[in-house]
Length: 213
Image (cartoon, helix red, strand yellow):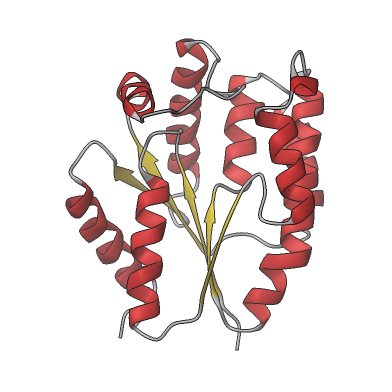
């Protein structure tokens, strides 16, 4: 039995991590085997790459091309070590970010050549793509307010980028959602958490009949 692969996208502060945890609990309560993971990360190697990308001093001054390749390296390991085996076991895989983040952050906001980004993405994926993607859309200024309000949180390397970068990220995500309507569903992330959860449940019930039975 093959599993189901669902990715969650959106800028930091959009609430996708909260919704992943809520969905995981609901699916487990329904008796579904679930695996949640994140990008970059999800493996020992991937977590080391995450540290390099986000907080390590060595990552300061990293060029966009290096950033792209490090994200791809983390994804390649995650796909082969975690996601593919989990799907083969019939599990539901919930990924906090996947290929669309690279398409948008590096291909759009970093202005790298889209064809090259797509080729590197394809190589890292090895043919594995989400069956469905939920895009949590939120105004970048609102997302930053949420991040700032979190006690004790320090900005990582990506979060320290200027507002214009995240405006480009949002525009890139929405354009991608228009191009891939069958896979990507846009979720209004400005609403209350419970309302968003209900929207997620309704969306996935339509996409995967009997998912919560």
